[in-house]
Image (tube, rainbow, N blue to C red):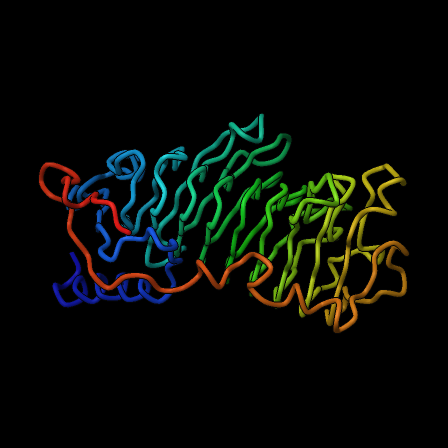
Length: 339
């Protein structure tokens, strides 16, 4: 058992990081957050993460922090659409692991599905251990204004289904082989580490934008790419697929051609694959496909800040008061509406 001082420090550390990194939730955000503790030893409010989520009332209006003690949580988790304003936080992603083993449909196989808006996850490992041979999503993100800080997201095929909405990933480690970041969200990946398990020409990204009117796409800013052998930066799942790599280190895992049209040459004239101030042994453009371009300074500007996902309005600190879970669950006072 940890000494009392260590336990107190851990609680202080968790709450402090919550204040620094938590995404705000607009004008309807609560000024007081409800704190729910998950601990497999039974010393928290719940032993399972899903039980803590289930305790949050439908149409929730209050910021809820679910603080998860270290452990391996074998759970298939869903944050439903009617439960916004939830933050789930561990203290160390290597120590707080959410794991499941499933495959098949990309919308049914995820270990962790975020359907709600205004969700935040911090310092967690989310993994699908199915392995090679089928679609096996670790994380599905289908809510709006969703942020991940310092998380590890692990699988082999379709690891991160970045489905729809505006999303922000900061200092995350994302690992997989085949199309392991896929979907049609508008997402900014900042200072993330992408690790490819591909042993041939599998793609890191498969972005699905299917209309020029959709303001979606993936931007990787200040990231790092490593891998076990060779891989492509992306392939065109949708005809207007949009992916940008800026200020990103590319190891020699990246194949010289860089990109793939998914066997449909008509997509070459409509996709938007761009690179800007990238570096490393995999960054040479001498043999890049001719339909992938380098951005000029002016062209790059819209993609280099959080403005591209409207982030200034929702990625910020939000509260400095906490209410503990009552013995009878969430009380009516704890779920009051806030202007």
